[in-house]
Length: 207
View 1 (tube, helix red, strand yellow):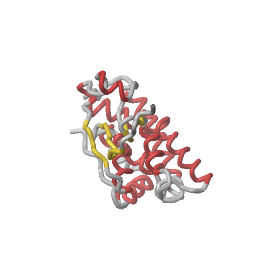
View 2 (tube, helix red, strand yellow):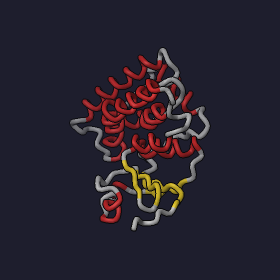
View 3 (cartoon, one colour):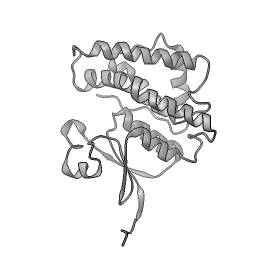
View 4 (cartoon, helix red, strand yellow):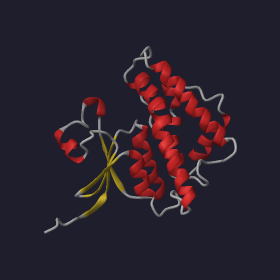
């Protein structure tokens, strides 16, 4: 006999100062989806406990609990799941592919360097870490790609979408990683447009 599934409000296991977690909070807030937030202190090993690893063997945040038998990890997978059928996920085939293009860019070219530099400086307190200069260099390369696109378009995939939410999360706290956005006016204007969207909030600072 299949187990009975009980519908419960979405539960998010996350760290409030993590951009990957904040973007999940943003989608839920923008769409008005009820949820319960469970703060996970990753620096204290709370994502590596046997109980947590039973839900997400990869031991990372965020993690979305959909019902009492179903968990979904990986921030951008969660965004796609929550946004399906809403204005944050385009109906046009090519525009959906554009959203995915920028989600892949965010995780490959943006997050490892901009978020990595922030984590190294603000959380590990290692401003002289030997890998930090490479993170800064590659982070600026990602910002330059964003600047070029945003100089000719208000958002990344047509209208405001989860592509913008994914890139907003760490970009608006890039200064904590040592990045200066003064030379990126289109990125700064885009950040203001994102903040003007109902339900969009700033991520708590790291200290």
